[in-house]
Image 1 (cartoon, rainbow, N blue to C red):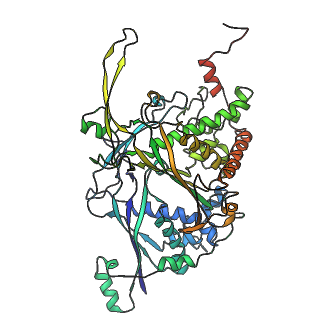
Image 2: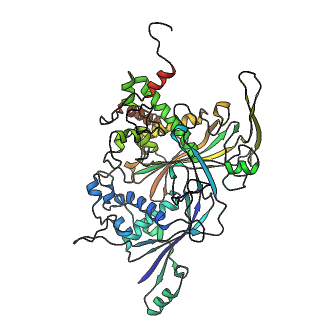
Length: 576
C-alpha cells in the first residue's frame, strides 16, 4: 500500500473572489474565511474547477463522456461510471441494485494561505447602459465585492486513494493545464478575477507496507512532509496520453483555445477610480491599485475592459443588421446583440434591446433547455449570459513598465462644472482626480473552443482597439482613457490538427507544447495571417446575416429602432 499526495503552491495572478454568500455594511459580498478569520480557498472550489476541466478533456483522451455532457436532461440525471466520475465520485450517486456509484478517489483539501496575506480590497462595479453609454442606474447594477489582491499565495494539497494509472493520467492532464497558467478559481472569472499560477508541483509517495510504517503514518499530523517526490511523474503520465478525434462528441468537449497578450498603451491621461485609494489619498478620484498602498502598481479591471470590448462588439453587430433590416420587426427578429442590463418581468412593458434572459423568461423557456445556446443572441453566446457561462476570459491588466516610463506618472487634475446660464462655475460642483499619465498595461484574454465567426468578430474589435478607437476608464467623452493595443501576440492551442481554426495549420508555423495542447503563436508580422483573418471576418458577416431569434420568443416594440424613433421622429410629408 502506498500513500500518494500532490502538493503545490497557488499564486494569484489577479485579484480573487472566493465568495461566502454573505455581505455586511462595507461590501455586498465577503470572501470565504475560516474559524480563525483567515481567508482560504475551499477544497470544493478547487475540485469543482478541476473536475469541470477534466470533464471536457476526458472524451479527447479516449474516455467515455460524462452524463453531464448529455444532450437531454433525462440522460444527465443518470448515474455515471466514466473516468472522471471514478476519480471524483459519481455525479449522480445512487444505491440502486447494479449501480456502479463510488466515492471519490481524489481528496482535495482546503488551500490555506502561505505566509501573511496582503490587505484585502473592495472592488466596485457598475453596468453600462448600451444606448446611453452611461451607468445603468435603472437596472440597479451597482455592486461591490471583497477580493484577495494579486500576489496572494496558498498551499495546495491533494491525496489519491486506491487510484490506478488511468486516474493518475487523467489527473496529470488537468495539472499540466494548470501549470501552463490556464487556471481560474472563484467568482467573476470571466470578468478578470481568479487567475492563478501553479508552482512547485510535486507528486509524492510514502510506502505503507509494514505495520511500523502504517503506525508512523497514523501518528504523523503532516505525513505529506515525509513523503518522497517522484521525479518526472508529470512528464511520464503526459507521454502516455493519446488523443481521440472530436467527431460526434458534444460541443462542450475540449478542442482548442486562443490566448492573446498585448500592451494597452494610453495616449494621454487615464482616469479610473477606487473608493478606498481615493479616501486614503484625499482626492475625489484615485486609480485602482493591485495591492493596498502600492502606488507603483495600478491596474485596469478585467470587468471594465471586458465591458468595453463587449459594448463595441455589440455595436458592430447591430450596425451590420441595421444595414440589412427592412423595419422594426425585421431588426428585432435578427438583432444579434441584446442589452444584458435590461430586465423586466412585465410582459406588457416595452424595453429597448431587452436582455435574452428577460425575453426567455417571458417565453417560459427554462434555463436548462437542451438548446439554450440557440435561443440566445450572438453576443450572449460569445460573452455569456445568466443562462450560459462565458468562454471568453478577460483578466485584470496590471501596469507594465516601459523604457520611457519605468514607474507610473501621476497628475493632479481639477474639474469644475460650468453653469449654462451664467457661464461661471457651478457652486459645489468642484472635484479633483489623480490621473495616470500615458500608462501601459498588460492585456490578457482567453477564449475556449473558438468558432471562426467568433474569431472574426473578436478580431474586428481588437483591430479598432489597435487603431485607438476605444476608451477605458472615466471621461472618454472628455478625451481621457484613449488607448491602443500594441505588441500583441496570439497563441492558438489545439489537441489534434483538425481542432485548430480553419486555415491555421496551412500557415506552416512552428509548434510548441503547452500542457496537453500543441500551440502556434502568431503576430502582426506573421505571413499569410491577414488573409486568414479575413476569412474569419467573412464567417462572422455570414453568421450575423443568417441569425434569427427562435419563433417561440414573442417580440414587441422594444427594439433599438423604436428607441431611435423616439429620439429622432421620422419626417413625413416633407420638413416639419
